[in-house]
Amino acid sequence: MIFQDKKVVTNLKQERFANTPAYKTAIAEWEIHCNNKTYRLSSLQLF
Image (tube, rainbow, N blue to C red):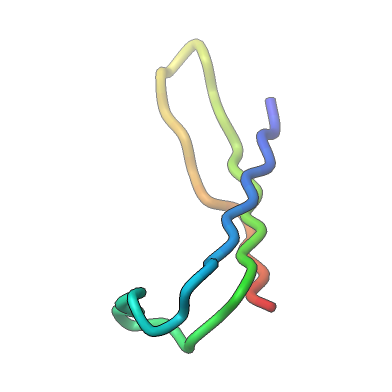
């Protein structure tokens, strides 16, 4: 199963970006294995 997650930063001055460049929108794709009860980040796009 593939799950897509979108996060939007509304106030860049209040956000702390640890080990990533400053971004306004992040779109992540997660690969979920229900039988194993595991998940993995397969891609991340920063805009």
